[in-house]
Amino acid sequence: MNFFQSIAQALTPQGILWTLLIITLATFMHELAHYWGARAQGVAVKSFSVGMGPILLRRQWRGTEWRLSALPIGGYVEIDGMAPDTLPGGRMDSAKHGFARLPAWGKVAILLAGPLMNLLLAYLLLGGNFWANGVPRELNTRAVIGQVVVGSKAETLGFKAGDVVTAIDGQPVNVQRDPAQADNDSVRKALSVAGPHTFTVNDKAGNRTIPFTWKPTDNGKRAILGIAYSPDVQITRVGLGGALAESGRTIVNAVPQVLKAFGNLFSRFFTLNFSRDQGVAGPVGTSEIVSQAAKLGGWALVLIGATINLSLGFFNLLPIPGLDGGRILLVLVGALRGRPLTFAQESSITTAGFALVMLLSLFVVIRDLSRFF
Image 1 (cartoon, rainbow, N blue to C red):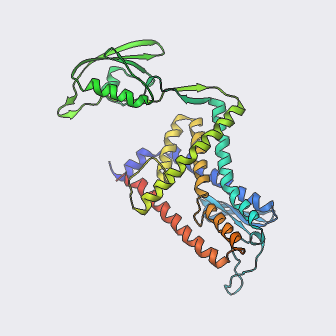
Image 2: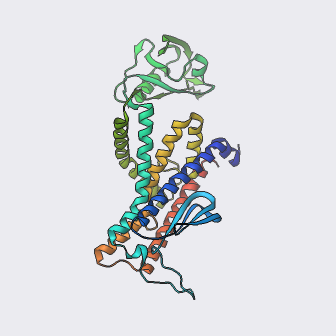
Image 3: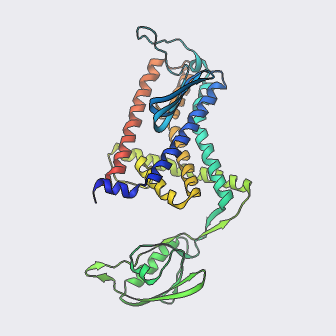
């Protein structure tokens, strides 16, 4: 299978369209929050674009040029005074107006509005999911089969996803803190011995036994039964208040995981380690995940939308010049030194930070694509 066939198999047209739609909506709401933050403080907004690149449509409304651009990969908002204007002859206007005239807290409010909007959207989407579908709790009390490999011996024998393994060769499965590990140990021990074996499984119809004869090796290769375990999950129905509370807890608990993922990403970036991990995904990896979610239906896409908004919110808060967090850092540095940075100083620092973000984005894309070669 060649490179393009591998990508075509991983991605679906429906998944790509959903990815573009989710990212565009997340970016639109992010920029709209910046817009509201500026207008609430009397700062003009020169332009607001949905999409990037060449402008397809434009309309002037309430002092802002609203644009629809050709590339559906985000958007931008141009706030008066955030960058110097160009005067006739190519000179830069250093006069402070609009955003530049605001006190530090006003600037921070505008910059912080975008990431907070994404975090709010993640909070509401997660809350809606918990309200509609309940709150899942891992019990770690049963050995639940999460997946049966297609074409495997397990499928031939009649194992099904959702079956609960209660005994192996007549011995109860010992599930304690980590059921997946306990199950794998039990299976590994049993299947290391050739001969007849019996699994006792429970499904909605009750208990049934699955007897079979096993060889640990097949033509010199280690034989594989073909089952994978998943956590035992219990669904608890909650009201709107409980759903929103659970959403808040989920986001708070996600903070150290997100920070760890970003830290791992930067570590791999600076060491040029292109091996893929389970942390930050690029556009190809994201499209692959969305393609899988699109097959499952609406609520899976809602959870993906929440995850993308959560990642976008946290990423933009990183103190890297060029991102909202970096701009906030520069504003705070100016406040501490008693005078804001000049346009020239801020532009130089922001350009360097933006270059880092672009290199990081390129690294993630290459890492995503490298596994298809």
